[in-house]
Length: 122
Image (spheres, rainbow, N blue to C red):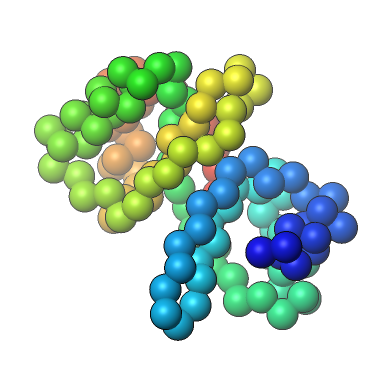
């Protein structure tokens, strides 16, 4: 992990959000960065295996927002593959980062219920 953050810092890339998962075979690090293409290039050059994927980042103004979002997801019968919280945005609100099978439909559904979705890639 330290080597990864050092590579990104050396490339001038800011990590905005981070989640790690450990398994017997390997670890998975999911992160939101301010320069995804540069991050991918830097990490590949340093020998890391990477996979970029789209996520939906939703601004949370309160804990009630998370409960409301999860209710909308449940009511819409959407299966979330994963979600995690991220550091605050420019407005200093926490961000809920999520991934679902149908990203476009999920984002449209959340927006239609008044959630502020930000542009992000992982």
